[in-house]
Length: 210
Image 1 (cartoon, rainbow, N blue to C red):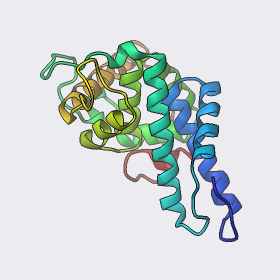
Image 2 (tube, rainbow, N blue to C red):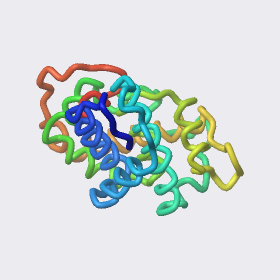
Image 3 (cartoon, rainbow, N blue to C red):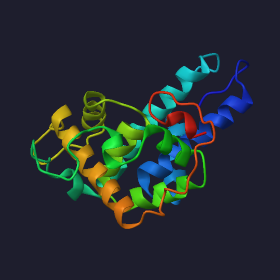
């Protein structure tokens, strides 16, 4: 990652911390998260005078590209077949609240001790579900953007290149939401203890990663 006269050391450190938290959620393992952040920072050159928000977004997208490729390599089975459209699951909608969790609650977990509980739950998901949940619920990305990210990273199914569609992403996201709803129903103390303490909400919950 580039450096120069315009750089703000605090901003650079904040970006690195955000990337680590995102990588931890995505990979489900802190050692793999560290390796992913190191690979990300080593692979990009960012103009030190670039707007900090734009620099963070560039680094985040690069981390996703590398991370999705690594997830597919370690858990190819979860990417091997796309869910059928209209597959009956316990959650009918693609909204996070359908799982019994509000966006404010998710943001609160990410900004509190609940972050570790969320990591533990995510780590138990198949790689494809975890990747899609993080992009949809945490980063606030839509199905089309997530499908493009999966395909760009080579996280394709056995059906061939560019196999992920917005519909397939939505169906997989519903499976992840169903898992979350079941987890909360069987272990209501898990995650529920996290409180929201005035964490600002933005697009998704990415703002609470720092």
